[in-house]
Every structure is written in C-alpha cells, then in structure tokens.
Amino acid sequence: MKMLMRITELMEGSDPLKNGCVNHNRGDTFCQRGGRGRATAWVASLCALLFATSVFAQNAVRPEDQVLERLGFEQKLDAPLPLDAVFTDHRGEEILLGDLFDERPVIIAPIYYNCPMLCGLIVNGLLDSIREVAFTPGQDYEIVVVSFDSRETAELARANRNVFLEQFGRDGVEPGIHFLVGEEEPIQRLTGAIGFEYEWVPEINDFAHPSGVVLATPDGRTSRYFFGILYPPRDMRLGLVEASENRIGSPVDRLLLFCYHYDPSTGEYGLLVHRVVNTAGAVTVGVLGLFLFVMLRAEKRQHNESS
Image (tube, rainbow, N blue to C red; front, side, top):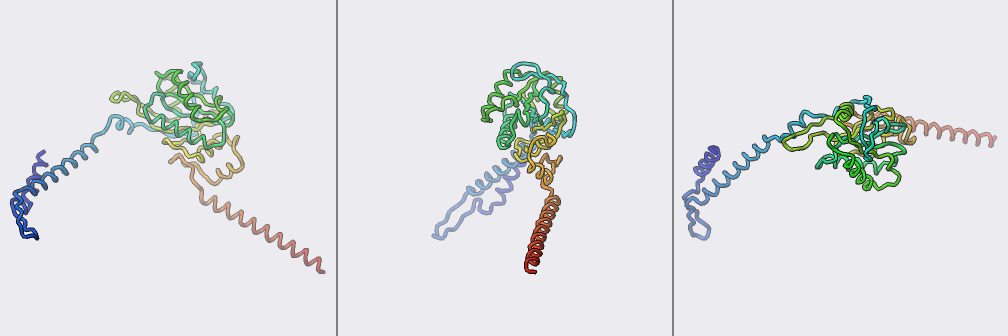
C-alpha cells in the first residue's frame, strides 16, 4: 500500500500540467486545476495494483500443484505386472489381472471413474486413438481401464464401460474391453509396477495424479508408455505391434518399426533418419542394378540376333 501511495505522489509531482493552463489553437485557455494529474495518478495506481495482483497470483500455489510436483509416472520398461492381483470387473465378479493376458498385448489406463476432468480426457484420448487403428479389441489386443480409487464400485465401472462402448461405436469389441475396480492392496501393486503415482489431496477433496496409458506384452510385462491425453494413432499402432512381439500387424508395420524408434524420454516414436537414408540408398542401388541387368540382357540378345 505504501508503494502505491508513493507511486501516486511521484506521478502527481512530476506532472507539468498539474494546476497549469493549456493554450489551444483556437486561442482559448483551458485550466487543468489538477484534473489531468489526478487522472495520471489514478492510472499509475491501477497499473501498480494490477502488477501487485499478478505477482501475488504467480506466487500463490494450489495444494494440488504442490502434490503434483512430487508425483510422477516413471517408465518401468519390461517390468513384470502383478498378474495374480485380484480385481472386480464390471459384472461384479472377481478376476485375476492375469486372466486378461493371453496372446494379445494389453492397453492399461489408470484412472478413477468419479474424476471431474483429467480422467475423462485420458479416456477420450484413448478412444480417439484406437478408433483410427484398424486392430480390434478382443481379437488383436485388450483394453484394461483400472480405477485407482478403492472406494469405487462395480456399478461405476459398468456405467463407464457402457459409455465407452457407445462412444467407440464398433461392433464386436465388448469381449476385449474391461473396466475394473479393486481393493487398495492390488491397486498399489499394479500402479507401483507401472510407475504410476497418485495422492489424495484433502484441501480439494480429490486425487492428484499424472496422465497416460501403458502398453503391456501378452506375458504381462510393460512395453511402451504414452503420456498426456493425446496418443497419436500411428504411435499406438506401432506400440501394439511391438508389444505383441510381431504377432499382429503387417509387413508394412514391421518396415515402419525399422524406420521409427520408440524414445523413452518422450514416450513417442521418432523417425530414424539414418535408417531411412540407408534403406533408400539400398533400394536405389537395387533398382539401378536391375535396370543395368535388363539393359545388358537386351543388348546381348540384340547382338546375337544381328550376328
């Protein structure tokens, strides 16, 4: 407050027009009587107040922000998952996590169903991605959405699964989409295995947690991590092909995997330029060699015919 008063005093004292007169071109005289000085002071005071408010807002840290600073989503590549952990599915039946692993890769999405915003964005991002991937849940891969809130029920899981299936809009995928709830012990075992950290924040009556999904191999080991709420379909497809150990996908996918490499630091696939250049060079040499071979054969045939 003293700073604001001091700025006001300085601005008022430095105004050369305060209590002075201004001669206009029409020849009349307009006396300020401090009006312009007071206006300038008010503007200065307002600017100083806005500056102070901005500084206060920047320094004000929300409780969830403080918690998020110490939470992480650590990539534990090739880590074994607790396949013997017991969860409850959308039908209210107990199920071993390992029952969902067989010959197909698995997408694991740790969320909680009563999440007011972030978890919905994670699920929507997953939906947007898998809609663009030609593989089919239940045939080529499995989707396992797990609540990390032990208070949530199978009814919540069923309701969220129904919405997921409706928004997916593809027939025949129901057997490959699983929404689970569980007790605290199996939840912590699973989240610990995939490096996912979360914490209840009493000040906001909500959880603080990171966002992302994990791809696992058919034998129950972590393979790839996609962070955030947007998962490019190309990366998702390549991740599923790699996680499946080439059990799904086409020769084109395997060629793409030769040219693209998963970067654990970003959770994305990047183009390996040197491999592309080497491959393009080899193809060029092969085409030229074939062209020369055909031309030489044709020339030799023509020579034989003429002789």
